Image 1 (cartoon, helix red, strand yellow):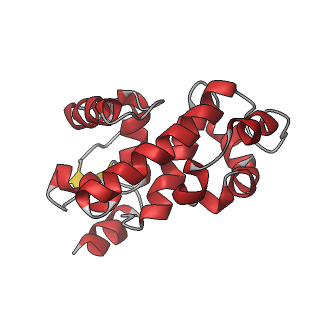
Image 2 (cartoon, rainbow, N blue to C red; image 1 turned 135 degrees about the horizontal axis):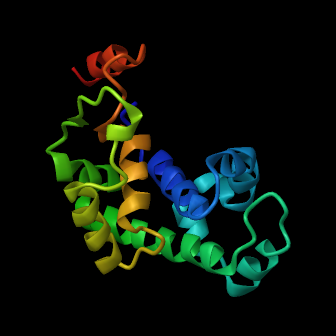
Length: 168
């Protein structure tokens, strides 16, 4: 479903980055742990996490205890706030890549769904230039799917038409 709320967009960005190299089930099981550890995904609060607080998160079993992923969550919150200030909202920045209209693909089989796209390549490159980390093209393609910017629901999927109607 299309997501436009900045806080939810930040949450999905954090979870997609945390998922890198891991299974989605691992991250989904830890989602509440992430919510608690990262101030309910409030980017203003996360952006102010001290080095000591980041270090303490390395002991938190409710999240993936990877130093680079924890540090990137904090630096991504800072970059997120900068982008929000520059564009008025992170949503405007992100949805501006598709002129506010989702990309609706027409795949019939899962094997047709790509891991990246020209859009995810462009956005990944721009996010990296803005200081974001753990935002490679594959992560960003999954992010675009998660926030409804890319609709890869298969032609036969029962949710496809409901989601398309939601866009209208």
